[in-house]
Amino acid sequence: MQAITPEDFFTDPTWRSHVLLDVRSPGEFAIGKLPTAQSLPLFSDEERAKVGTLYKQESPDAALLEGLDIAGGKMRKLVELARELAPNNRVVVHCWRGGQRSGSVAWLLERAGMEVVKLAGGYKAARHYIRYYLAEDRHQLRVLSGPTGSGKTPVLLAMRQLGANVIDLEGLANHKGSAFGAIGELPQPSSEEFENQLFAAFRAIPEGSAVWLEDESRLIGRVCLSDKFYNRLTAAPVVVLGQPLDWRVDRLVELYGAYPKEDLGQSFERIRKRLGGQHLKAALEALEANDYAAAARIALVYYDKAYQHYGERRKATIIAQVFADAPAPDGIARQVLESC
Image 1: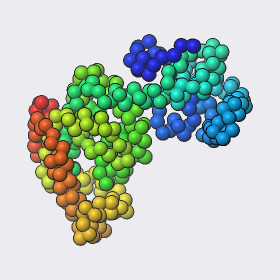
Image 2: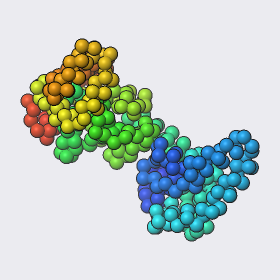
Image 3: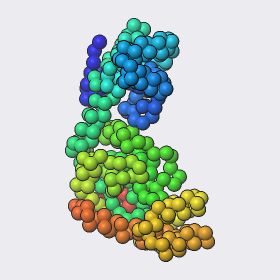
Image 4: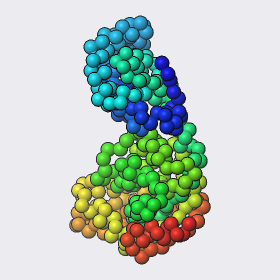
C-alpha cells in the first residue's frame, strides 16, 4: 500500500482530491486535528484506553486480540461512513504514528474498493512538519500594534477586505488577548489545534507574500504560541496604531458593556495584583453603578502601562505610526497599508 509523507500530502496537488481520514479516537481528534481531516474513529475513547492498558499491563498480543474483537463488529459501519465522507472513494488514512490502527482501517477500506493511501508517521509526523513550517520565514510578516482598545482587530479585518493578506490570531484562538478576552467567546482550542489552524491559514496564502497579524504576547488566553513562531512575530516590522483615549474608552464600553457584570468583575479580579486593591475597588464600584466608562478608564491605566513595558522589552522595528481621530476601520486600514 502506498504511503506519503505529510509534506507531500500538504504540498503535492495530486492529493487534493483525497479525503483525509483520522482513525484516532474522538478524544484525540478533539485535542487536535489536521486541516481538512474527517473523523473515522476505529476505537472510542474508552476502547482505546482498554486496549492501551492491555498493551502495557499484559502484552502486545493481548492488546491486538482485544482490538480485533472490538473492531470486528464495526467493519461495516466503518466502510459505510468512509464512503459517505469520501464519495469519490479516494482517501488518505492516518492514526497517531501510522501504525496498526491506520494500517487496519486502510486494509479494510482497500478491500472495500477504495483508493487508499497511508500518511507516513501519522499525526505525530504531520505535527512535526506543521511546527517546522511555522518556524520558517515563508511569508513576510507585518504586525499591527497599538494599545488596548485602539481597534486593531477591526482594522485588520478591514485591511483584509481591501485585499491584504491577514491572519486573525485572536479569532483563531477564540480570545481577545487580555484578562477580559474570554468574555463572549467560544471555548478556546488547544494550543495544538490552534497551531494546526494557523498552519492552514498560512498555507492558503502564497509563499513570499506579506501577511498582517496583530501584535500578541506569547499567551492568547490559554493558547500558547510556539517559541519559534513567537520569535518570528516579535522580529517582524511593526505599524503602531494610535487612537484618542476617549475613543478607546468608548470602544471598550461598546465591546464589553452588554456582558454580565459578574463576568466583567471576575476579569478585574484576575488583574487584582497589578491593578492594586484601591483601583480594583473603584472599578467594581463603577461597574455596580453602571459607569462602564469609569471602569474602562481604570482598566486602561493598567493595560497602557503593560503595553509600554511590553514595547520596551520587545524592541520592535517600528516602520510607521498611524494616528487616527476615530474614523471608520476601512479608512484607518487604508492609512496603514499606505504607510508601508
